[in-house]
Image (cartoon, rainbow, N blue to C red; front, side, top):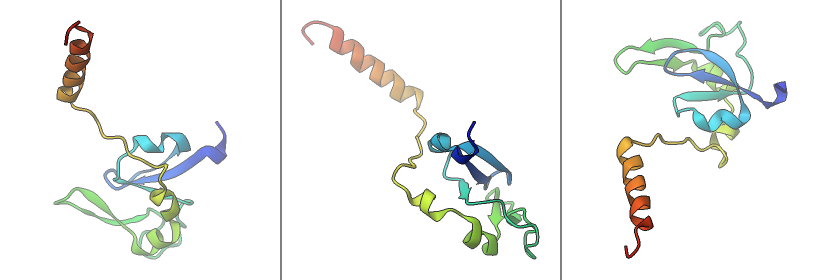
Amino acid sequence: MNPKNLKLLFSLITGDMFYVEEDELRNFATSHVILKEKPNGSCKKCYGRFYIGKEVHKNYYIPCPRCIKKYADWDAMKSDSLMVEQPRTTTDIADKSFADAMKKIPGM
């Protein structure tokens, strides 16, 4: 694994920071923030955790306003190549299978 292909992500749901390969970014939800580098531990608000608290009613971590300006990779999050894949429901899968089966029947 080449370290140049790794991106650092912060999850707003769990509050964890983790590395993933760059080509796997499309598999992550919009609740993840791509970071340029790990936040500095000397931040007076978050102490390098990248969050300052948790919104208990909405169940997500509140990013540090100082660190999000400095460490969030806004260019990577805006890029056209970063497209989050939407999960398919069983109804969508069944409808496609039914349509494919109907095309195979002669005369339809």
